[in-house]
Each structure stands twice: as C-alpha cells, then as structure tokens.
Amino acid sequence: MKKVFYIIITLIFLSCQKEEFEILGASESFTITSSNVNVDFNIYIYLPPNYPQQNVDYPLIIGLDGDSEFENMAGIVSQRIAIGNIPASIFVGIGYVGGDDNESNRNRDYTPSVTQGVEDGITGGADNFYNFIRAELIPELENKYQIDTAKTKTLMGHSYGGLFTLFAMFQERDTNPFDKFIPVASSFWYDSGVIFEFEESFFQNNSDFPVKIYTTMGSLEGAVMIASFEEMNARINSRNYSSLKYKNEILEKYGHSRSDYISYQNGLDYVFNN
Image (cartoon, rainbow, N blue to C red):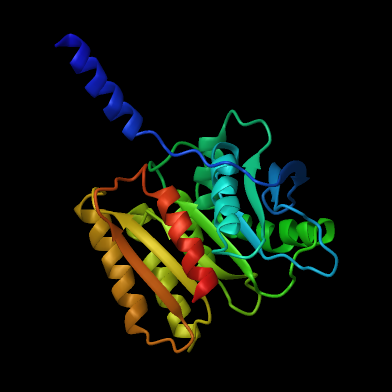
C-alpha cells in the first residue's frame, strides 16, 4: 500500500512539472547597459535553424523573465517554427546581470506605477523599461541580426510580465515597435487595477488599434483575477477597433504557474496566423 501511495504522489508531482522544449537552432547572449533603467541586462538570443539566410529578414519575438524562462520560451518558438505554425523567427529573452536580485528587478521594471507596501524595493519603472526595449535594445538587435525592421515584433510575458505586456500594448502606436502581444495571467490587481487607466487613456487618444492580441487566464486563478480579465476583455471588445485582432481564453483547470507555456504556444499560432 505504501508503494502505491508513493507512486501516486510521484505521478502527481510529475504532472505538475512544466514541460521542457527542445531547442532546434542556436543560442547566444550578450550584455547591454541601459541609460534608461541604469542597469545592465543579459540578452539571450535564439536563432532558428539555417540562420542566417541571404536576403531574409526575420520576425522578432521578445519574452520577459529571460533568466529563468529563456530556454523553455525559445524551445516553444523553435517548436512552432519546426511544425510550420510560425515563420523562422529570432527570439530574445531579457534578463539581468548578476541574477541574485531578479525579483526586485522585475518588480521595478514590470510595474506601471509607484506603490507603497506592495513590493519590497522600487516599483513603477515600466516606462523606463519600455523605453529601454524600444530605443536601446531593439536598435542594437537590428544592428546585430537580420531582423525585419517593420512592425512585425511580438512581446509576451506572464504574471507581472503580462502586466508589462499590457502596459506596452497601450503605448503610443506611432512609436510602438510591437504589433503582436501575448499577455498571460496578467496581474490586473496591481495598484488597484491601474492598468485599466492606461486602457482608457489609449482609447481616448486612438480611434483604431491595428495589432494582434492573444491573452489568457487560468480558471483556477481565483474570482478577482478572472473578473478583472473579463472586464478588460469586455472593455477592449466594446471599443470596436476595426483593425484589431483579439482573442481571449479562460484555460480550464490551469492555475497561475501553469498557464504560461500553453498560452505562448497558442498565442504565437494566433498572432502569426490571423
């Protein structure tokens, strides 16, 4: 009986583990110093098989939490390329030099407003972080790699990373380098739902929204997260943007920590094929 019990516990444990994805292609990294954020970033690069090809410009996909998530996110991108769901693309994960204070770094960079008592350390650095990506990182990437310089860029993130992806989504379109967004399990609760203010401001200043968005929330997230997710979906759908491609899904039987990888897979398929 004890042996059966241990087998059951092991199976439950294994079922909760995140899937690992094989990377088909090459990877490398470099460090960049940001004048906007005043820190050094580790930039992790995935290059698809047969890169580079002559006269080919590759779409760029950027993912957050690069220090912990690069390999699996790059594996997902590699998988979607291999099965033909998305074109050969360059994937970039953004991480931090040092790595010992990643939680404080992401709390600073992924949050759109300054709060007191919500997180230890500095918050409200999303604007600086966005400007780092837009004005420092992407030009450097375009200088180093064969990246399509048109608006064919994708941003994806989970939790606070999803919150930042929403924040970037609502920035000025004329200077926004992204036209595809995959915000997953976004922290709508942050600062009493301040992200809704950014959505409202965007609507007041824009008559159209020519982007593609795929967004999810796990059904096990809890009532507040799900209600906020549904409110954001209702708001965006009510704006009647003629050029917007928007899909939202509740992931049945998924919680907060398990919703990211399946969402990235489905999200990449959606934003590249609609």
